[in-house]
Image 1: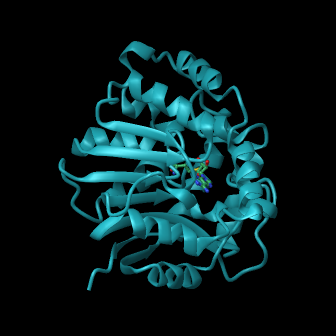
Image 2: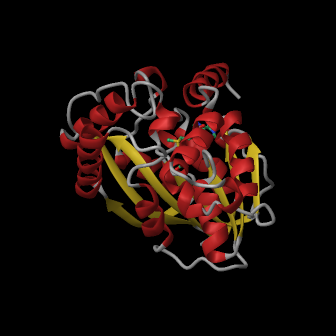
Length: 282
Ligand SMILES: C[S@@+](CC[C@H](N)C(=O)[O-])C[C@H]1O[C@@H](n2cnc3c(N)ncnc32)[C@H](O)[C@@H]1O
């Protein structure tokens, strides 16, 4: 891997893996009166889906295709593994997840044990740019809010295409560069622009296609994402942060990051979309 990418990955991992996250999650669970011995995936949903509109978006994305128990699924940049557990639980399929942030993977493994899904789930520390799986292994690849931290987009989509079976599907949900002024930082994915690698939607589409993917659906999700963050901020203003939430993953300036992200969406500094593509085997 190129030297600059290795350097970027170290900064990205440092951004997400702030240390002490498991302790904060456990303290939050206690505060919310949730017992680890009887924890469910729904109890964890407010903290383990680190993407816009949380579980709502996960359900929408999964609804774009049929997922069956015989599918082998990979979540690239799986974070704490919330989506991995959701898919394994809902569709009874086997799901692997890889993520650059070692702390997330280690927490993800514990949370998976807590909810009794370790038999269907495999979480590994690794880079999206060197996916630690053989060619044509997966029926479905999922990626949610990851490519905005990855500068080498052709390698990102190229690796996804490599591990997909012919005609295998890609489900994606991503933040892109909008047509407005430069994005404001800090945001949830970057303290400043040095680790933010936003591509425009048209450039991301082109890179996906050049990697051998055919786009089936591309659905802009701006208005619903704006509404989601407006409501979330109003709730925080009125009641403070909840015991369990993604603010735990965002550090002391979580509110500022959410405010900036909302303004970036409102002013078209960034855009958001989800969709499906498949590996073109024609
Ligand atoms: C905003 S979080 C999203 C996590 C997860 N997809 C979710 O929806 O909860 C971004 C994730 O991308 C991961 N990431 C960033 N660059 C990566 C790379 N090059 N390879 C693998 N994971 C990466 C980070 O470690 C982080 O967990």
